[in-house]
Length: 126
Image (cartoon, rainbow, N blue to C red):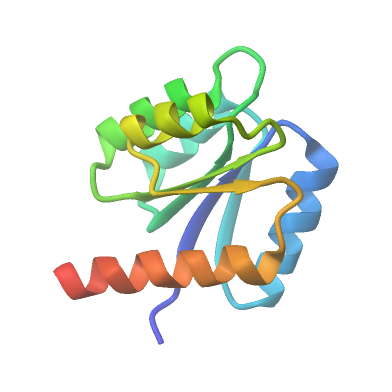
């Protein structure tokens, strides 16, 4: 099985650490960033299969972060996690390149299934 590389971005540190640990325990290779700036720096050094990020972050919101990261790596799959899911947020996220939107707190099993689905889809295209 191919190792799934995930970049997880969230400014809520407790949530970020808990979710990343659970994802690692399920066999994912997870890098974390607590801000958009940190995520952009990490993504410049490494290529990821899937980006999982929060919509509402200080300094730069998730949609702007998504546009930058997707611009640098058009093949990356994107899952949005948000505690403020609205139709408007969903439309904006999809138009910006997100493929999945999950409400926080998300079930880790559901999130991992979504990641696996996206990575498998990417492998089929290659």
